[in-house]
Amino acid sequence: MRKFIYKYWAKVSVVLVIIFTITACENSFENGGFDVNSPSNVTSFKINGVAGQIDQKTGKINITMPYGSDITAVKPEMILEQGAASNLDVTVLANFTNAVKFRVTNGNLYKDYTVTTVVLSPIKSFTINGVVATVNDGNKTITMTLPEGTNLTALKPVIEVTDGVSISPASGATIDFTNAVTFVITSNGKSVNYTANVGVPVTGLVVAFLGTAATRAEITNLDEITAADWFFSTFTGAKYISFDSIQNGVDLSTVDVIWWHFDSAANLPAIAYKPAVTAALKNFRANGGNLLLTSFASQYVDALGIVPSGKGPNNVFGDFPPNGFVDGNSWGMSFVGRENHPIFEGLTTYETGKANLLQSGTFRLNHTAWWFVPEWGGYVNGEGWRNQTGGTNLASEAWDNNLDGRVTIAEFPNTGTNKNVIVISMGAYDWYNETNSSGVPSQANEFIGNIKLLTQNSINYLAKN
Image 1 (cartoon, rainbow, N blue to C red):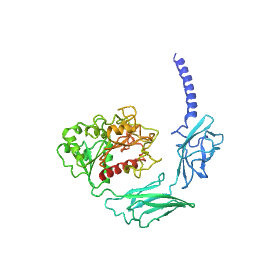
Image 2 (cartoon, helix red, strand yellow):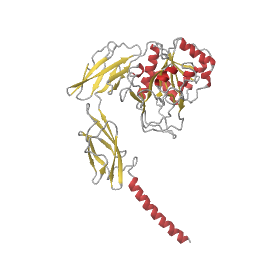
Image 3 (cartoon, rainbow, N blue to C red):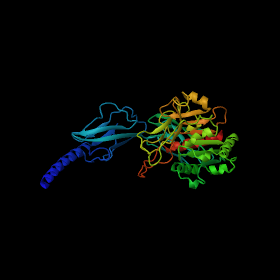
Image 4 (tube, rainbow, N blue to C red):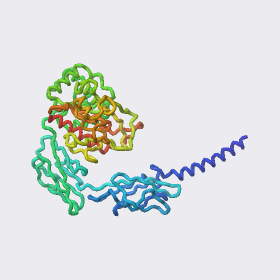
């Protein structure tokens, strides 16, 4: 009996070894498990003669093209290991504006590659008094905010340009930035204009961060902590105000803008609905005070009478740790038709009126409290929403250029000049770089600059109205 069992397991073991060997041969070169010496390697990859940097472990091919290169219709040059073939046809024109993925096979082996192509910006860096500007090559803008009190009439920018590029006015020239300044970029006999907008925070602005914690140091939500840290490092006149202090009668008369960023729960805390609190904040608005409400705090428009009863956000949802997830797409917004609104000034856009806020591959919790327009609430479209809420819808999801599908950013009221409430309610408005269920942080969000600038613009806009 023992001999039979031994022979049986010996045969099973041989079969398992064969299966494992075949499986390993077929799959050992998938993403994350590449053999750097694989017969299915790409040994060379070029675009217009520029060689890409190939990482055989990850399958990433990165190519940096000279300024002015057109990568929308090019034929790549590729060399493979002997006997290998690719599903990327190098005999036809391809668009490398976005990442291009392809597979190389050799027998039963394969490897997947991703080509990422970047065209150099004509401006490597643009700084004034050590402050670095945001250069947007899409809409050809240079944007920066200098410290409060900076004299804009005689500044000397330090500009570094790419090889073969000249700029006028030149680096080191004394320039008056009181109004927008045009810089002329010239390369290979062709010129384009970049518009520089240099600003300073509103002088003497008193802004407050509103929270449920007794003090700023006692805030526990990581998204709120990250937002508060940026806020206090950006606005010199910043102060922290708790809901308890409002209930106890704190003086709000000297405050220009109150920002409530609530990310802790889908339901607003009971303290926010206390009669003494809502009365104080209504009085604050009536006397010229301004409110910025973000994330789940967007729902507060109902309790404060900013919208008619029952007309607050009708679609509230989101995940909570450790259930954050990763999506393969970057998340953004469309503000087509509202491009000239001050809160969008200087944002890095990928198309006219479109900007990303959250990068693909970044863990996110998707905390959302927006208006779902076409099917719920009887709004039908953006016009119906404006008529029923008294607000102006400024942005929607990235696919919605008519702004008829969602209301992700809005201002109130819709009439008159005293528009003293801004609401930012989309899940992509995410300050903290989340970690997965094991506590491992994801990649940094490359679009966090858009979130910061959108917030700063909103606060400055409210203060001026």
